[in-house]
Amino acid sequence: MSTVQAKTTPHAVVTGVTRVFPGAGGRAPVHALGPVDLVLARGEFVSVVGPSGCGKSTLLEILAGLQPPSQGTLVFEDRPVCGQVPDGVGVVFQENAAFPWLTVRENIAFGLRRAGVDGAEVARRVEHALGLMGLADFARSYPAQLSGGMRQRVCIARTLVMQPRLVLLDEPFGALDQQTRLLMGDELLRLWRETGATVLLITHALDEAALLSDRVAVMSARPGRFLDMVETGWPADRDSRLVEDPRLGAISARLWSRLREESLKAMSTGEAAR
Image 1 (cartoon, rainbow, N blue to C red):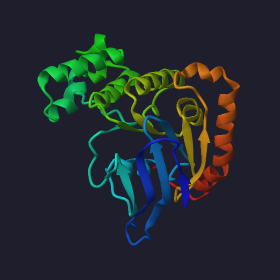
Image 2 (cartoon, helix red, strand yellow):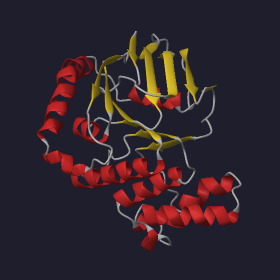
Image 3 (tube, rainbow, N blue to C red):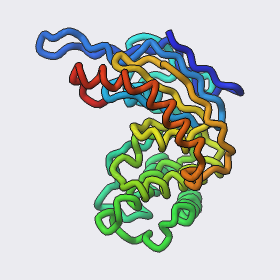
Image 4 (tube, helix red, strand yellow):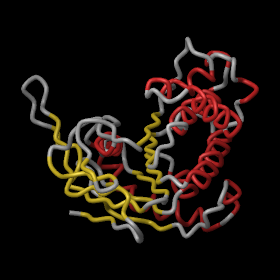
């Protein structure tokens, strides 16, 4: 079993987690993930990379309480994670999840209103998020009137107004062009610094993981296990100007050196991305 330890106060702890999906149509069960152990330190930014089908998104969904592990335990802030998204956890997916019938302001306020937050507090948090995400001029616009990057900013803002202490991101920039991805990465780092939240990012982009993270966890082909943990050594005030730093290429190269054989294994077995 591979164990990935954090250096400071544990915030979320994954212990011996596996996930096996039942076989369909008489087929054998699919062992998708693990066993894996992972400790996320409070306030750190960790990315997970791995070949398609290795269980990266499955791990995130289990940590979010969206699906159960077959074995193992998950703890967030000393409380077990089981059956539902824990209080204090926010999740952002790759798919555009903005509600098309709501304006930007209404989208951002949606979760707060469902949670019964006082109207004045809703207004305060939403206005702050609009300014923080550069969306103030588009508060009355609908998602169809926005670019892909702006729609994703709406989804991130809708999560952050809930003031999560752990933010789980599953390929949130996957549909964006490279330039927009870099700028969105800068926004994410700025929000991470300002909120002090712990962040776990799932991504296929090795350079993105290398640039954004304090640590990058490398997973094997299915069933996904941790092969390596790469510490980047970047300062907290980093941004996309790091693309000029030769150390970024060295970190990306190390990630690829661990992933190349695993990616070939995944391709040879025809695994579907998950």
